[in-house]
Amino acid sequence: MPVEINQTASDNLSTEMRLHEYGIMYEVEDNFWWYVGMRNNLVNLLERYWDWKAQPQPKILDAGCGTGAALQRLADGFGGRISSQNALGLDLSAEALRFCKQRGLGSQTLRGSITELPFADHTFDILLSFDVISNLPEPNPGFREFARVLRHGGLMVLNLPAYQFLYSEHDLAVRTLRRFDKGEVRKLLAENGLMPLRMSYVNSILFPPAAAVRLTKKALLKTKPTQDLHSDLTPPPALLNKLLLWLMAREADLLRHSNFDLPFGLSLITVARKM
Image (cartoon, rainbow, N blue to C red; front, side, top):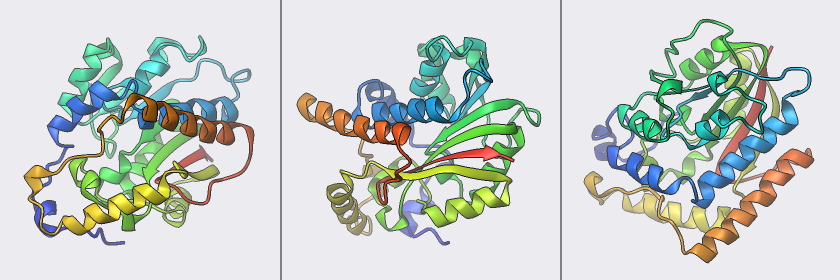
């Protein structure tokens, strides 16, 4: 599926996310509703789909750990059930890893690409990756590497931006090259020996207004200089942030306590097991 982006903007993309975006991410991700909501999704899905009694102390990789907020949650023990040495993070960006070190995660992170993971086959019990494969020109090498380093029966939790028609300024600013739908992800899972256990769109309540904004920004990309591009990582007023946090928490509860998959949303979250 071709990636429909403004050609001038595409020509000016670097191999990493724009450096200033990492600074913004580090400043906001501990409290910003989207990041907190996504970490809640991760926690609830791990609570539901990993057998903590039968398989305690899993070894976990955060593939594309960014500035480290999710990795820190895991390294802090996940309720005492994960040894800090069992939570590792990898990112391509030295700038992102610099912020991880500021969190005290220097010994648990390393630099590398998700298309050439520096680990032996069958190393990890759980692999998580949030909005990273979408930065690859071709996603299959990322899926192949994720499957390779997972042990048989291991769990993958993957989040991806949803719907290519929503491609906008935010995607260019954070170097997203493509967005996904369920059909594409199912095909990639099957090609790499991964069986989907759960696949749901998330951030559904905000989908209509957010889609309207994204589509407007997409229309502006044809005329807007690439150096002026900015992501959506602008904290809302505190009261609105609390409301959005509450809404995201309800979605996370739905993922944990029901089998209902949301039919649309700004992101697509997948839980899969290596066969």
